[in-house]
Length: 498
Image (cartoon, rainbow, N blue to C red; front, side, top):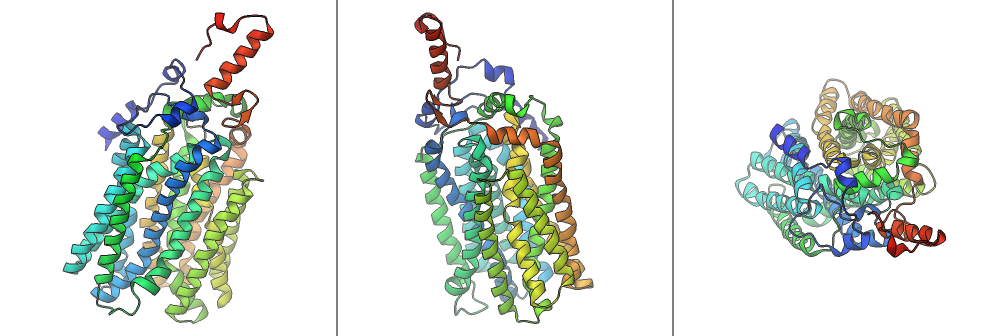
């Protein structure tokens, strides 16, 4: 791990090295197809991509978010299916979540983060899809042998593939396009992840596992075989797709261009305190979110005295609210500062998770459903605000935040342990603690980092004016030419500095 970390560090450019390079234009960034690899230390021109230039690659990558949400949505359904088919205990079935989220602890800080810095986003997408496809194929022999260990291993490989995709997809969406829309882009893309999470259990109950023998796992085999075929096909699509490469050099240049508004100063990784706080907040938030989701149905049964099937219906409503919340948050970000949106939503989470501990009956279920609504924007907003101003450290910092998703392997077990000794209402104190740590992060952002974050919000890089795209080298050349003409100097006699 440490060897890979040192290699990854060498892939990050120095600011002086970036400023001394020839600057390509954003048109060159779109025309260059880096099917082999791209140097993370070199400029590609992608630091000033426009909205129009970024739409197609963002739509393509958004498909990955849907896949991630679909896989996560199937997890709880498969968990229950394996318990019934293999006659295993609920505690042992929790190993499925441990296998899935545990992969996030290993991949992003090591091989996934190294691949994205060494070879670029395209090959990280392809690598993640191939790992995901292999994991999906491994479900077939696991089902034939009816091996719970095999299922855990398969799910670990799937988690490894999805964590690799997230290591590339999240920062790509955040950096591909005008920087002032970074939070909005990731929120919209992650909204489709939420849709996938809603669709998966509905399809599982009404299509994949409808009218099947509880001991029959053949539908699990065919479901994952279909997923494997699709993701391998998607890997081929990504090989040929026109995806611009945004390097750490591009992000260093963009941060430097915004420095007048943000107060940006290049710092070594060890002094990126906002990032470290963001990683801790993300770890605790994701753990708390998964803790709530994993116990939602049991909580509903205990609180409202309903059946498991009715509890599943309540959970489907909660997931629907989660998806609606993401779109609502994206809309709010067009009129409110993202740091304010995060503060509002985290406040809602804190209020309703506390209420869920004391309110019984359907009211308690409603309180926990509202927790899911306010959780909606937290992950993507913590992500984008944490990598703001990282410059040449953007890809490495992003991989650390993705690794924080591994919090989902810890909190559900702790929540279930408390529920076994007390009840599910009292067990919500475990997610409450995680949410409290995460709640401290927007407080920090709104008091300590407000100027920096607002500066990125105000920048016009990637937007058009009369001289072209702001932040692009052709725009600066045009401006320089006009200045020379006003002074009566022939622009052809004076070299424009790139």
